[in-house]
Amino acid sequence: MRLPRAASAIPAAGLAAVTLLADPGVAFAAWAAHGTGQALARATGLTSVTGVTATATGSSVRVDWLPAGLTSGTAAAGYRVVRYAPGSSTPETIGAGCSGLRESTGCTETSVPDGTWQYAVRAVQGGWSGRAGVAAPVTVATVVTPGAAAVTFPAAGSKHGPATWAKNCTGFCGTATPSNGSSLSTVQVSIQRSGGGYWTGSAFTGAAEQFLSATGSLATWQIPFPFGNFADGDYVLHVVTTDTAGRTASTTSTFRVDATPPAMVDVQAVNRSGGTAGRIEAGDTLELTYSEPIDPASVVTGWTGVPSQPIVARISRGTPDRITFWTSGGAAIPLGTVTLSGANGYFNKTPVDLAATLTVSGNGVVVTLGNPITSGAQTNQPLNAAGTMSWVSGPVRDLLGNSLAGSTPVSEQGPADVEF
Image (cartoon, rainbow, N blue to C red; front, side, top):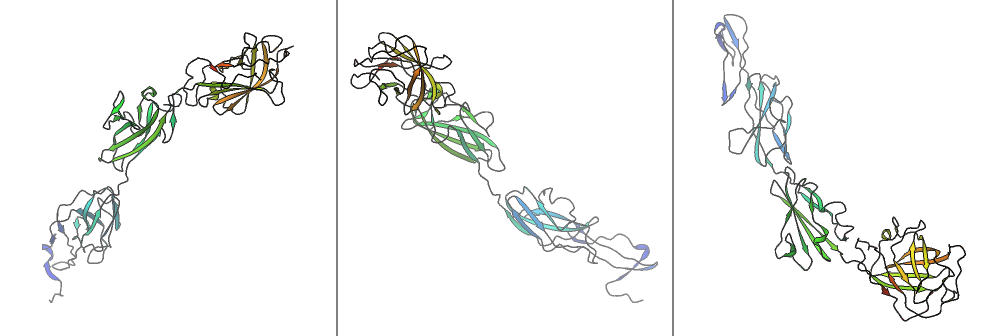
């Protein structure tokens, strides 16, 4: 009997599993046998996978390939993806996205280490694997998202006194983020006084930069720093964060400290337009001036300065007469006492309460006097003697929370004159 080409006659009884080695670790063969006695056997194999491509996006690699299968035309049951370092025959451990038997013709491996790699794919049929085709090279260079450091207090350009310092944190505070793939390891700050030294732990005398370290949650860091450590002036806060990858981020915040308390400057009485000099009348005003603007809430609780505040001005007879300030509910207002210039007896009785309004004006306040509240109160003859008033304020505060310094009365500026 003449055998067809590419076929061999093998005794049927002698048919057995046959292994054909294509390359190390690759075995593939299939047999078809017909009848008894002499049998016709035909071999088939797994084709190599071609068209392999590898594309990196960040630390992820997308691998795609063309379908492969048996030379007889049957599609492969699946595929195995391998990754090698250039020049190496030892496969690396591949990530879950591409590990195991893959039934599709593509996969994505994530968290691939930086470097240059070769991706190859083998077709799989049962326990057999086909020959790996041409490997696809790819270079993975993870895009680093840098970390960041930010100061939430004190804000850049801000100004602080005892009332505003550490209002929302214990001293210095801010936020920090690490670069991608890492975590924060340290947050440190230095503080330098403008024109002076760095904080050493006890004074601003350091010639070299010295750091304080944050503890606790570094993502929302805080570093205690009492206001009493400061003197008046400008300061620079320098923040440096370090993550576990050794990458750093930094930022600065320049702020000003005002620890100087306000002081009394002047008191003036102004006669209303068309009024009678030397007589207290509705529309006359008292101007109480400080060295800087005063916090309205330190004068009347809850007052913002707008609108004008209704109060009571109390005229008490003495030698000389005095004016004090009260709320309509009878609580003292800490504007202190104005002592009139040696004159007494502005009214026919004592004390006399006048309706008044309080207005913020520049570095001080203006009290506009109204009509008497006290029943039967009447003004006496005008007091025309020229003199100089004095004033001692109560414990008001400036806008940064510094309390008034001292209690020595200040005298009315300018030449002696008739009040009101």
